[in-house]
Amino acid sequence: MGINTNEIVIEEEDVLTYAGSLPAPNVQELVRRDPSHVPERYLRNKEDMPKKTDTAAHLSSEIPVIDLTLLSKGQEEELKKLNLACKDWGFFQVVNHGVAKEVLQGMKDAASGFFELPLEEKNKYSMDSNDIQGYGHTYVVSEEQKLDWTDTLLLIIYPSQYRKLKFWPTAPKEFKEIVETYSTGIRKVAEELLGSLSLVLGMDKDALIQQHKEVVQALRVNYYPTCCKPDQVLGISPHSDKTSITILMQDDLSGLQILHDTKWVPVMPIPNALVVNVGDVLEIWSNAKYKSVQHRVVTNKDKARISYATGIVPPNDAEIEPLDHMVDSQQPFKIYNKVRYGEYIKHSLKMKMEGKTHLEKFKNERVG
Ligand SMILES: O=C(O)CCC(=O)C(=O)O
Ligand SMILES: [Fe+2]
Image 1 (cartoon, helix red, strand yellow):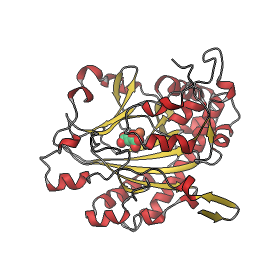
Image 2: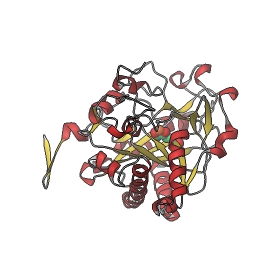
Image 3: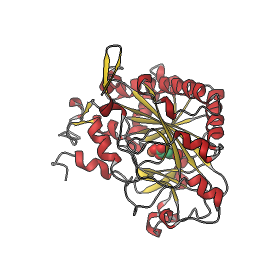
Image 4: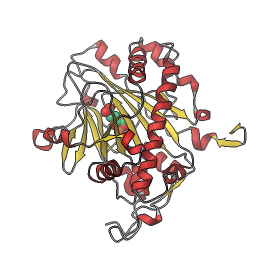
């Protein structure tokens, strides 16, 4: 069945519904009932857990910090910094981004209020079994896989006709309004970044926005409860994002780590800054000049952590492939085949999160 919104007909099956997850326990509730126990399904093998030898905390201060105000003025130095940040790190933090600190704080207060509600209240917004919008878990595809120590609220925000308001919490009562205000601010940041990225990739300023066909914006709020066995449990498994770019607000608790060369580097919170990373779609468009970088989240014994990831993606019917001018002497053929975003995301959602394995299927056979 299609939905008719003025002239646009959206195929519901195509755009609004994604493969869902198997049911999984509510982690916050597990901890509330027995903070001293972690079920087997969450306990990982030693080799999958952070080790001193594969972590490089001293590199945290090298993760680039970009000034968005300078970028939007087209300042040459800052554009160069952006290009290097995407090439060398795939992650950077953004300051002077224009989203007021009251708005950032308002989003944090509203989300904390939601997660503090009793389980039966939160479960009013539970994901349906065939979809990823709502409160629940994503990427749970088998009874055997190890589970992440997190509960998630995922909402598609823009274009507004894709919203499923039944999943939008009505408590705390200001939730909806602050999500709108926050998301409108983040959208401007996304547009500014996509404009600057277009320029540094040698295109007109609006080229990457055009590539999206339509900029779809989703908000994924991750709640990581305290964990009594942080050395055996991960908040989120290593993965790359299925986005063009992701814009993340973290609270004042660290936990996010990114894979840089062969070492995991913590992304330390900078008050009121946003963390931005290159997702798979930008890796494909740029023919891997910019790579989506694996990241994971570790757990914490003493304090719950909440993060707010805005995913910028194209609609399901957009075809994505390396842009012609990204084929050059450095990368003399297109390393990904053309794929509809909808096909790519459905394939990815059927797999547990495991690094970048979901991307293999779309690689050109000439990639060894
Ligand atoms: O919690 C974080 O810092 C990262 C979350 C994340 O990687 C995601 O939602 O894709
Ligand atoms: Fe992520």
